[in-house]
Length: 198
Image (tube, rainbow, N blue to C red; front, side, top):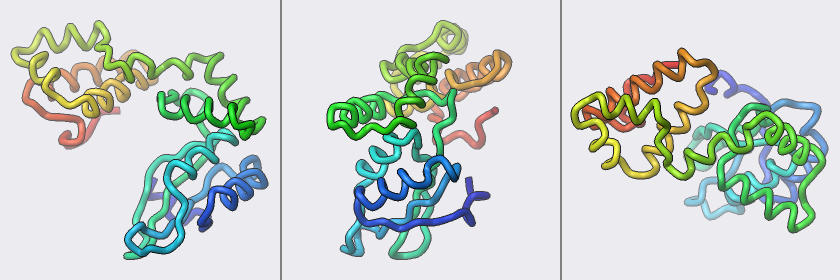
């Protein structure tokens, strides 16, 4: 994502301004940095929630954020990948958009594609912290791994489960399951891993 650092930047202080830009440009560009004042500056800034909601309305999604300087940060927004899993908070946001009559055609198309290819429900078990059979077996095979896993906070387990279910191939998933169990056995959460396998 750092490779995108030099891509186009826009700076808006309200959701209305951001949505206006998105309505005009969401089909002609594949991504943009949304620049914001940091909260500590006291300057007008759009909330994270507002920025994400407006992006979802046109089929876009946020990802990595970076600091620009002491007063500004930026968050990368881009078109949602068709096979990208939908989190429960984003599903709730699109329900709100539909209820308020603010969902755009591109946003609806992204949802239709996700429902057709399984991306819409891909993260449901992750959100519910359901341990898949392959991971359960891997954890059971290593002394202490299952106990350590259960001791991880929900956010850590959710991150690891999401990483596993979004593997694109069976061999990649198998490697991730093995790595997750091995790290759990020594009490390492995902954010403590030197590098996760791909």
